[in-house]
Image (cartoon, helix red, strand yellow):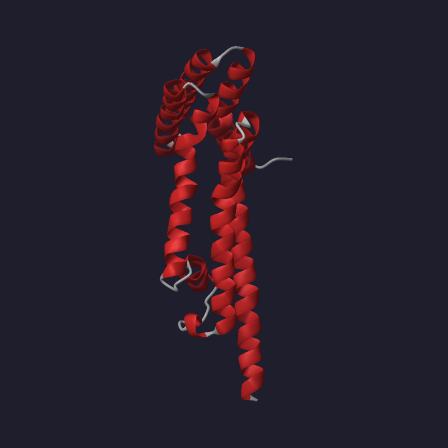
Length: 198
């Protein structure tokens, strides 16, 4: 038996991925221009449906604008893979932030996860925690962009579409795993420090 919350999440996910799926299907059946038009029409229909239902209106507007912009970029570049250029900017910015945080010796994963898990304020001076957060930051940076760039370069439009649709859940899983591992590392470090005090 599904709960209303699960149904709502599944419906939102389907609505979010609909323009991409329609773009991929239309591009496979026809060509780029009809695919771009179909994605734009689908985005507008999803927006109208969400506005009528008064559900996640802000997300709906942003999603419709993004899908329309993606379709316009694909039409402008003349390549189906162009549809995924704009969504690749988000991981590119995340990767840049991760790399800058590493260069500043303040791994982004540590700045965020350490607070969430209740880690020590001086985590940067704890060698194990600092190393863990640095590695987590590198993994987040690589996962977020590397797969998309590789698929883009190889012009694997169907796989780009699948990755585009799965990127939200993938980010959530990476974030949850990072927090879980951070909590385990912080707990292990606390236990080691307490055992050393005895």
